[in-house]
Image (cartoon, rainbow, N blue to C red; front, side, top):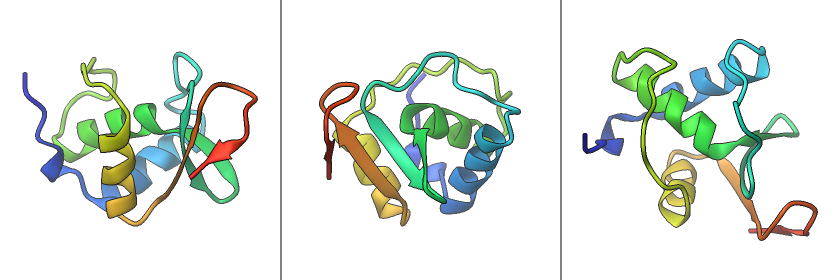
Length: 96
């Protein structure tokens, strides 16, 4: 299944953030390097994008999606107006 990221809007990302922040949809594994910054919190960008895609496309929130995160994820989130940071590995200084 090829994913159509053009369906994802800023409002879908916002809804995904709320789901994560409220504890309704916690990340199953910790993020290793790309974080969406919202209200001073670092949220796992790949998990947020997966949820946002599900919201945008009326898919179950537990739907498994296969995609690699990286520059394209950063560009997508920044293009929608979100602050995103990358770290080389846990504990290392933030990269922008």
